[in-house]
Length: 382
Image (cartoon, rainbow, N blue to C red; front, top):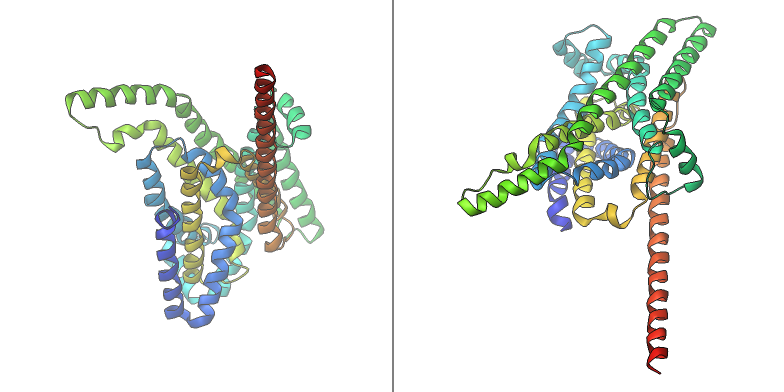
């Protein structure tokens, strides 16, 4: 099961490391290995959240997620995205941006660093909305009940998450502008960029999440129709294609997963520049990490891990909230990549351990109940 799910990840790792050695020697191999670990640690929460969505999709779309999806993730976010950043912020065409990335790496890194406030605002707002919509929803299973119960009551207020997100964005932009004024006003104009980028992240979430939610609501109806069609196909002997069985709901959930992955990738791409400014090594390292995140997502779905460890999804969403806060803080202040990566791992590990304790407690309670029933039967027999 493990080899079947992670086989492509192992193969990509081997090819990536060999390519790194051929490209830049053993030093390059070390850099690629570090970037891979960085991407996995920063995106583990992504895998947990993705699994919660992917389990609603059929086997065909799970394969699409691992094939076409990984191409989008690696080439789109880990290779093209850094180049697009430079092209947009420096008013260059893509070819000039690629030439700059290969010929003047220091200048390229500086341009990406200058674009960080806009990137952090966009990604931070998108991830913040995911977190807020999660904690304001009333759920049957609660992890931190003392916090989640009152937040669920507040969540009954319409558009509360949007209002809070806009307030956070406004504070971030005003703080950035105020600090820029104190330091000579060199970045005052970027406060407006932060505001516009953050609004762009919010709008992106509302559009993609709205479409996904709309089709997800219809998923049960569609699955029922597809089940009837399958029965009809069996009677007539004409099998249906996997694409037809997937439906529009799966397609829009796939799009949602890709946008979600893109948002999670912001911190990994930016953090990678602290390790190297070589886009080839960056693409290799982050690409290997992204492949493991994809495989881990499918593994969680097929093993039913989210059903067995019910608090994992909670921990992942709290990690998303922490990452959103970190991204928004990095608009103005630097935060060590170790902190960025470890916060998510700690929250997910905590939620996993809480799930294990819950399962043990339920098993013990069930065992005690069976013991009591057995004693009652013996007593009745006597």
